[in-house]
Image (cartoon, rainbow, N blue to C red; front, side, top):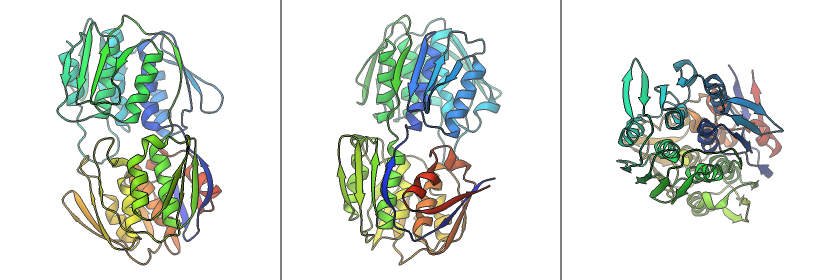
Length: 417
């Protein structure tokens, strides 16, 4: 199993090109199930989660044709298998996204209850309730969701809590439903907007994506289209935090500044100098940082996927700050690993109190989930001596060639097989 070996203490500087967003690409890949026409996608990141999703779609019958770098064409003309088996979805919660489009187009779907990072309870009941409101008959047996509907009907669906994948799944299902569907309390994340833009290019009629109310007017069929995946705002934010923590200067290219307003604001509060252009963000820092309070909440508030990175920043900042997690109840598993590096963190319920220390010391640590992995990389970059991060397969699920990109910026980091 691979691990990362980091010699901390180097200042990072230079330019880094941001990859396509994993959390936008995954639902957009499943949109290929909605049409018999070819879906041509560019800026698709080369990640473990992406290859897992492509393997699942290929198993179902989608023809997957790789193009030039980071391009792929999907054709769902013939889908003999309307099933997502447990063995193919157990590592990735996003596999639930095949449910809505498969049911909407073919009238049936059988999808295993998904797995993914162990960061807390992420039930799929809102997906199921929404599809039932649209007329689907659903039962859960032996760990599988069995769904049937001759044709889904438009409905007004008010979701109890904001759910990104739930919004995406129901939006795709509603695109082929009979009538109009209104999703109230919909997720407003940029990745939801990116999926909506792709669906619109395929012929869907969608209004309000990016707001709390999304309206979808169902159409009889969708057609093929071409779409470019949006930049990964979490990868962008991770590199910007790396610049701040190491006292460096990093410009993130091919970025989307409008998706990172809250993160850039917190970096400025910490004492970093933040500038931006249409498609780039730059952070410059002298490494002297102030601790900043962070509270996660659905977009446009501070993203849960940046919580761990800012906890790492607070570990070496001046003063004390609270980090409050409101999205997932089990997303502080990186705390005990940061403590192994010398961090001063106390956890009470959903809040961690982080007191900055003069320095972190390298040690052997273990990644527990995707963003915790990134947090440990950031800590290792500033820790004295050598840090070894084990179980980095989590990292490979969401960061494309992170050790190569960091090396180009001046980090001493290598992958050990």
